[in-house]
Length: 513
Image (cartoon, rainbow, N blue to C red; front, side, top):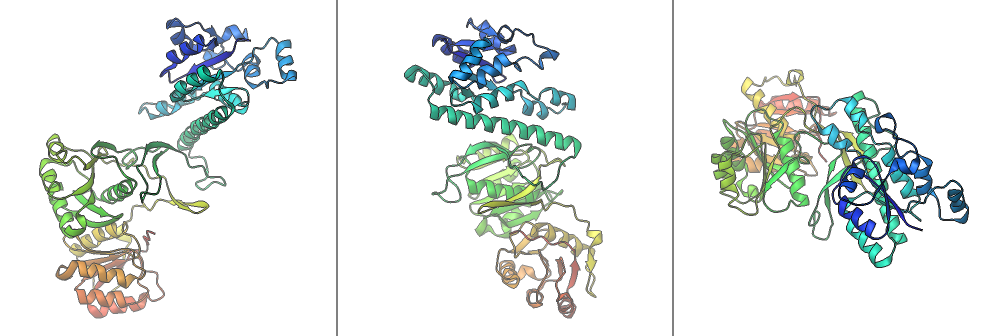
């Protein structure tokens, strides 16, 4: 019996050559809509699906393949009982299903898309054929990926059929295809309606692969980078690489850290990241000034660092950046002159995000643990400094309040236990990730050195003891911002008063584990 294939694809990449090869191998091709027209215009014999069903397309094309003559042919097992039923009903078995789905994702990506447009691009017949063929993979091959066409043809030419193992692999790929498709639809409709639990009983994390990594955190670990379905706006997953070597796993983690911190500021700001922590952060009169000040915070650690800025990189800034070895720079854009300067270094990665705006993707924060994962709200709530409480007898000056606001934004992005010492809108000392808070503070004071005199300090969480404040006084700190909430808060307040330090409680903790 002549074998039959049904081909109905939105992505027509390679479909003409594939159909031509199938026809040459003796397959009868059944097709629909635009796919049929494409195949027919190429001079390849094909049968329109209505000739198979004996029923016209109806409802503006919404119903064309939902028919027993299609689905009976796909779902029939090749058993005597099923084949007898097909014979009695004049249904021809279908051996190969080639389908990919309406471009729902491309539709909703259009800025002018309406809900009606999106709904009309929800495929019904396509997923039904895909799932039917995948279910019946013991007898039927399902192909949803044009990259598989060559492999399928080669196997048919050399073996005369698609073997059982390959059919099972194709079925798995097909169910992934429909799951991804349904995830896009679900996420889009939830966005439109606000429906759905933030933390549902069953959580599905879906993403599309951006690229394979050379390796993960270490050379013996495999890795790949995925973009969350629905990600948009200014984030590392939507940034465009303009130049440089392939990004590594660690590059992407650090680029994300740089971008998320520099997005905290509306004034020209620059960040230098090393191992996800900011070794330099500063606000400047312009982006070149901001970068030079950020680099000066810790020029030793800045070597091999990741830089994030919130303004276009101009020629002056690029010149400064080119003076040291940097792994990567992420920015809204790069002036042509800046690109000319920076691209002279073959390996530096340059990433462009587009202008910063309020539509940055945040979503839920995900942390993987062995055997599961944790979901939480992203730590991105806008804080109102007018609600902060001065708890000491000494009041901070307006200038100190600005410095404290700057330091508080930075410390939020430092690994706990986190301490940031700041002066003149510049992080001059950073203590990160120590097992006790006074240990982080001492690191920050040592880095700041004499500059700590007259500076301010931010702590991501409360002080369990007064020792950090005592050390701060020795370093010359004049104002402190911290969440408060310790059972020993009064002890810390008393210490601050004794040392003539102004202290503010924000009421918000920023642990970053």
